[in-house]
Image 1 (cartoon, helix red, strand yellow):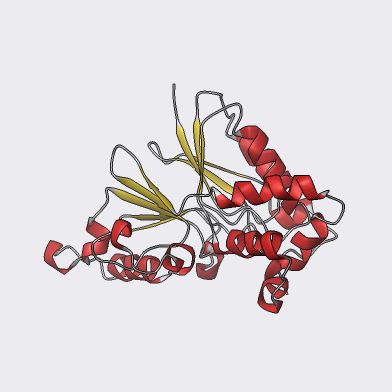
Image 2: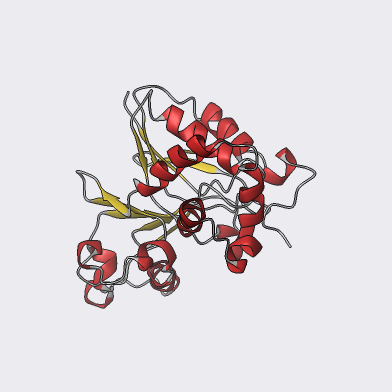
Length: 243
């Protein structure tokens, strides 16, 4: 049986990714959709990118771009390391590239260059790292940074859910454009939840792997999901993005 599986923010946790993929019993026939933020956090960011590129040679993979991926891409391209990036996990990413040769770095840069801003499947389901702001949909987005940073889509979905809004006319147009929307970017740990969250038409798959949470993989049809152990337990001598 062919499955489509969506994977939340990895943040350099290769051990967690391997564990979660194993628990989901990934098959070559599966399509894997990654929601971005592959780097910045645990110590194996560069190794995550190498693994993902190799994985894409054996099965169908779609890779969205996250804000942390943009930072890493810019660093690989220019050599400039903004303080804000270093303070939000970039220092561990830079360290993971310390012994990688120039050619390998360029191959990784090409991977980052080719990441997708968003993907819409044949059943009108949207996959994007953070969100979008245009009421006409991502195709009409005026600022591509919203795909990397926007939290208003998720916050709006949460508000509708909490109000138990049933009046179709009162539901914001953004939430009605797609059958379902799958995002990462905002850790569910912010709401004291460590499993994928659902609000209105939006599924949030970022279960806080960069912090004290787990990495999650979900079957987008059945909504069955699999998780790694708490990622920090796999890197006991590291802090990830925890203060």
